[in-house]
Every structure is written in structure tokens, then in C-alpha cells.
Length: 93
Image 1 (cartoon, rainbow, N blue to C red):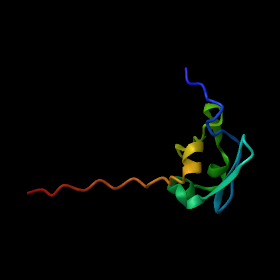
Image 2: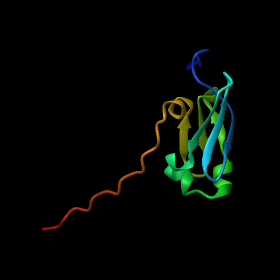
Image 3: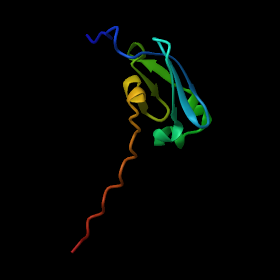
């Protein structure tokens, strides 16, 4: 069983605007990161961005419509998501 320690960052509320992801943490901090840090969220519709759930007792956020997850720790450490690379096509001889 994974129990969140008292020193682990926990998100208590979240807002996604057209430009940013804004999280309020249990210790009173408010952190805002650019929406562009998540290429999935940046490409999602407003409705998809607004449909999220806090997971792991606030350890992260999940957007089920676009299969995106962002951790509280990642927001605090400034870890943007990297887009998937297209698979290189093999040349046929």
C-alpha cells in the first residue's frame, strides 16, 4: 500500500485555463505551469482539459479523455512532458 507522507506534495484544487495549469497545494503554495508543458493538454479541447480527477490522494492529476497524467512533484520540479517521437520508417532494400 502506498501512503502519501506528510512531506509529499499534494494537490488540493486544480484549474486549467487556456494558457496554464494552476494547482493549489495542501501546504498553501499555488503553482502555475504553462499549458504547453503538456502537449496532450495543449492539443485538447476545453472540455477535455476541464475533465480531470485528482489521483493518489492529490499526488497527481489524470485526464481520462486524453490519457494524460501530471504529478504534483513534476509540477514543483518543473518537468514538462515531452511529445512522443514518430517511429522512423525502415527503408526497404
